[in-house]
Image (cartoon, rainbow, N blue to C red; front, top):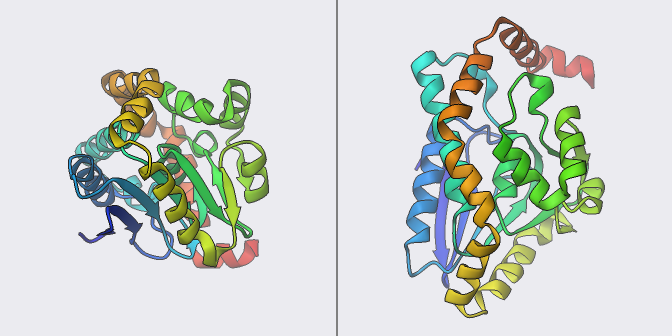
Length: 259
């Protein structure tokens, strides 16, 4: 695997996002993550999962530079695969802990939201869903995923504002469950994962699926209609202009000007 690392020790799997400094999500990462999660779901040697990133970044979200340059066929495949990944991860029956090692906007936040428990490194980091200002339609199922943790009122407001939260704000709003020093992140995630793993496995797993039944159903049935809506908006002139501005801001000379 080129974009993620996977290891299993004492029945606990650890997926580490490993694509560049900020772990931007491209089609290859989506496919590798989906394959790994599906495999672990059926692997009796793995009773729990931690997903983490690199120091300073969990994931910066969708790789807008690469995605912007996809042709229509590639764009369809990417967004179809990304929607499927959300369903696959949300329906993962075993304990899943997000060890959020830094910034986690947009797609990075969605990966964390699919987990059962989120622990974030303390620091000047941001997390949240900022798709709307960028010009990406937020599917109804993502609203339900966000509101599952934040509540409908806050999820509604934060999504429409594209609001990103600091670590302290994320903790206050139940977007994360713990904030720890960066050097303690993985040990805290392991502690929580093994706590869940210590319960009767079949009972814990079925209870999780029961609690997520409506959410999983929404993610499963969003595919076709939402995909066409997203693709139509993705190729609209206004969205392309908005994306160009965002991508332009990524250039080194513009980043220096903002600092």
